[in-house]
Image 1 (spheres, rainbow over the protein chains, first blue to last red):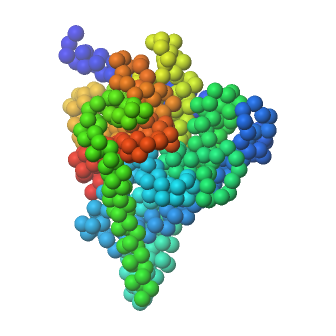
Image 2: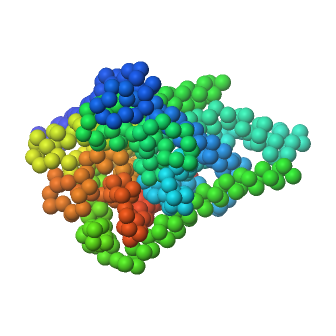
Image 3: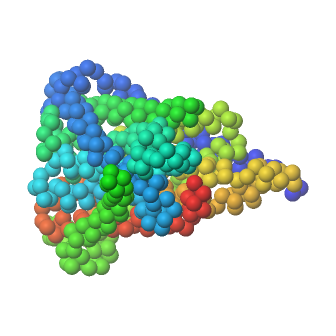
Length: 280
Length: 283
């Protein structure tokens, strides 16, 4: 075999291996998606939305408690996390700019984004649950908000920087004070981008289980009391899945399907908004 | 006036991020003081974890975290690089788009679902092949590998795509095959980015809780084979945090959380500052 032939053969082998790995990856991923959809659709019915948790074996059991709890937790986390994230991002882009402090905050925030979420849960347990003496929806929401802030901060910072400097200068030339320039010109220009960041942040936080395990804990019954343990889809899913009861496991798959669809929807919506904003 | 308030409000929010990070470290440290005083370095070198005797050694959990992450990397890196090569050099545009959508789909799936899938569908297969319970280090490593694969493949592909076409074209003009171009042009050019992305994925894997909690077993023993059930730091935290009944037990769990935080912080910092610096400044 000549050197050239050898290279051609090696090339073919490597390319075949690389295609094979892509096929393996796709196969696994479709296996998981397939299981999720089949099991999820199979377990879906109206009772899930009407009834709350029940002991295993009962006909009338559902996920109403977890669905409502999940919405409450995410809403609270959004209310706490989004304003802080947007304001912090505004500081980096409009005030801090290229200063050492701003870069330092960006770096730390980036590292925060990948910090293990269960550690955040332990931290919130120490600062909220221990002083209060019991689990609460507030604790869960605070843990989620801490995870959310770096995501919102990053996208806000990036999106505000995309607004052309000439727009700001034009507004300043008209005599507008800086906060007015930011509120009426910069925010308006970056509206689509910021909204996308918020949606992606919510989507990211919506699938978190670990930080809720010992902050909002779980509850098998419907509650709206923010000072008490609050059920969530993710923790409910975890508890039902590791239980030995088949009907609970079924509910677990239904919860998995509903949650995935919700998060997928947020992702798609975020991208559509960004796409529409760009086309304009 | 309003101007001042607004600018201070934004500055306060930005500084709050730094403050929270510092607070997390100090709070976890303070909470684990009791355990640090009681055990010192034995905490990370001894593997006897006996809550009934008030003895806590985290070696098995730390070993489990490192070993499961190592296994996950072992499985995921070659496949991810293969997928990245396929996507950046071989695949047709339509397939690229299709795969892009699939990655987004998978990023949308919460990690707890990977864990459920692992427990109900993957563990039985491992059990049939290797015997035993099926729950253990090997299952955890594989489920983790599958979970980080899309992320790893996507960022590796992005790093490879930064290679300027003109470099590739000149290599082809010299008669290089695709593989020659990949190994002598693209991989050297994108090396820092590829390594950085892989370390970033490693950082995610080491702190991942839900995907492995189902399939690890939570047995505080350094395993003698990769199919033995064992535990890891996040798994121990997830299973025992709400059951701890003595203050030393609690303090030891906080010690575990602090250990995990420091491990992941270092891993991510290395990826960010050492390998991805150039890329970051550019963006």
